[in-house]
Length: 193
Image (cartoon, rainbow, N blue to C red; front, side, top):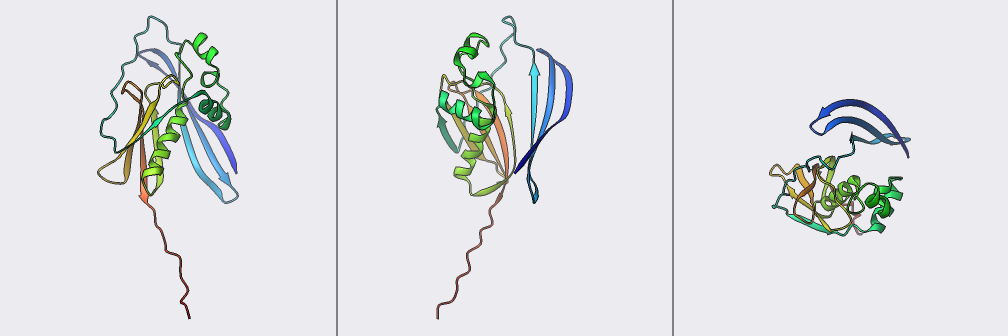
């Protein structure tokens, strides 16, 4: 297996909180048979918030979950996910750094970890093949409180809405998965003589 990562685009915009830099990173996973998976990350970089900046508005999470799972984000889980994904950012595993230098209340749960947990929730409840998956982080989650991953099928049955909500009931991540029903074939049985 081979992963090739490229910066596909960089753009600058002015937002209501100041300058923003948008970076599109494309990852292609391939083997000798060719490309098996293409993943794109839209990453937004902004200035460090100032104490005088207004707090971002929070949206309540949906209340129509058909499936839900409670997640306890402890420091071991976050450290292991950092190691697994080669993520060396200290905000995910160094409590002293994240609270004293960055000023956050606790370790930050990785956005891709939350997305992985949402995809896993779908896998646990739906016998289908995922053909596309999009997610967007809305509000950070910290290891200071448990959170929920939730999901509900759409009326068209070809998409599933997924979301994560924090302990206060606010939306932390929203996602959508496109699915197709799995085609299962019965194994051929030989006739007994």
